Length: 474
Image 1 (cartoon, one colour):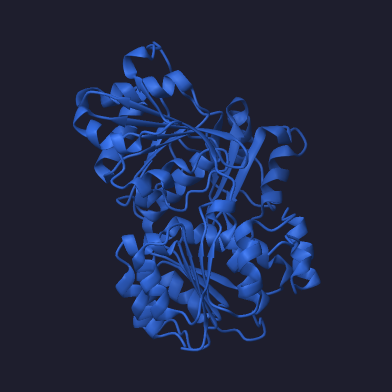
Image 2 (cartoon, helix red, strand yellow):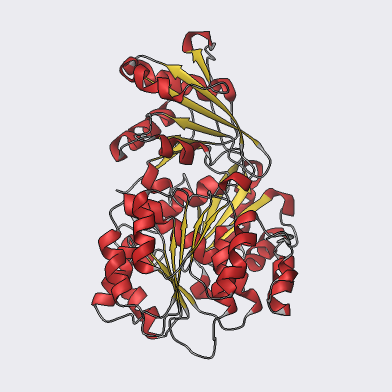
């Protein structure tokens, strides 16, 4: 489709106005190619890389045909991880601002089952979730897909890699045969095409990878002795001194150990992996996104759904198990026209395997040529202030900003990202002002009330040892 204007599509004036307010100036290739078909109620299988605008592609489509007056589940979006489900739901809510009373519910594992059941009792228009948790609610009779008209499989290739095919097939068995099915995938392996042939009807096949502008990434490879990988990692971070970095490991245990070792070396780091409780994962992701943590160490599964637009550096502490995984990993840097940096550490035993990675642009350098920097530390610019109140308390970003920047408050330039969840709110504060901000909220009021306040890295004023799992982010 040559016309990239959203106004060329049969969208409502309210939707077009909202897209303009959100900064959607023109359609990306995947949006331009897929949206006309999606709006015509045609099945689509689209290949598009992360960050290509695919969420808006299917989001605009399913919202366009939503009947808000019918308070039933009309659209279901399945995602491979909790983090991606949360990210997709957040973007759908932004796109739905032009439509009143749209209820979007997230159903994913790692959080309490009971509150999700309670939310389902009140109904929803759109469900975004992981296959396992959605299937569990279907089995319990908490969720009905009787009125479903749009099914979306986001990052379908990853869901198949993670073994979700049985759950996906069971979910589809409970969906109406007459529906629109949309598949979005970064790759087109045979299993994806086989899946498409069994769950879609005459699907339009779209590939926009070639049309999407490649990320500008400088790729470096260093061979290191197995027992010197940690020191090499520290050397790489010190040498490049990135504002933030994402380090990939192949196992949960390794990711936690690497994060702990980095902290011991004076580099602020956190780990995210499958052994963390959901509230812990949320805490980690919030702190990394709001620049109060410099380095995030992650496994591939845990990193799905992490969307940091200005990520300076990706480091493969462990060589990825598949070349496709390497592309996924490094594709998180160099976005939005920025230049990115990717470093891969490999051992002597992996040297032969690395030959497949050699090309005219990738640089294989000697680690000994990188100078040691003694006394290096990496400290983030912000700290995170936690307020024990959230959406359940009708908390809004403006309420928090007003309490911080009012009379005798701090300047707005010292206040960073504000994230509000059901029962907690997170505020990024410049390190130079964190003590003052803490005192302001500790002694002052928000919305006429006093709420407990604390700072990550310091002792919380509340003992959550017995209530974390049931109270936070449920």
